[in-house]
Image (cartoon, rainbow, N blue to C red; front, side):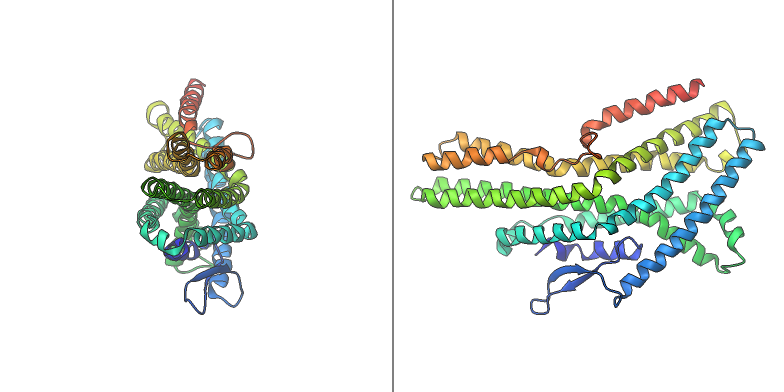
Length: 394
């Protein structure tokens, strides 16, 4: 089964929270996935624009509420300006996440190119081979769906003080509080789905590179058991494997072009959010207690842990294709150094393959400034501790 068939529930989730306006188009003959389409004839498109308007209104009013509370904390509650600036930074970061979700939609052509390239990869692998080695898209979707809903509901509950002020401001225009909370819930779900979307995109690339490793193993075993296998056939299979890898690298580069700037912004905003949440919680409980900050104490703890998890999701997702390419290179190195390739043509083909199997071809960089991956965790953790010490000393 094609991975796009398994992605239907995930696509429905992204459509429901207003993240994407695309609709799955099926092949009329095979009744299977063919492509994603955008048309004003589809209800999904109109729902996308309706949700976008609701989210814009919600974020605008919530931004006004946050600014009002910040001024109240500064003038009435007599809190340091540092705390106010950091809290405003968190509010701005949420508005930025809305913009980043629309950034993905604006790159629909690149997303379409990725889909076409993956479909070419599926053709080269063959339906039988893919069906024998199914992906874990469904299980990952179930886990991700539970996390998205849980995080959105918890965020909705813990930020209730803002919602109460929000409701009082727009009660004249919207009489139903259910509609208000529904719109806010969609905003929180959209925030979580942005990270989920990023993760699933890079998992698909990693999955097909993993299939390439499995295929190389199968071919090596077949060559070992079949002594009469022709050199021309072996070289042809190697060239086909490299063609598949080139396709996957092309798809990864298209995704990197889409996510390069957003991942830098998301890592920066989540880093600021982690520092702000930790500092505000410690400041309120151990230095200067405040009634307003007390009402958000659980929110600060929740934000600290969930934003750390989101950072780890970004780093893990970016690492997945690169790790699989590294494993593929190790596998080809073992095969090339064994006795399985006796002919000169096979050895040349293997050496050529090793030159093209490079992790940097699929490695995501944050706007070209640094490579994104789990190797950043120690640096980020150290930076959080450093800024915490600096802020607490002032």
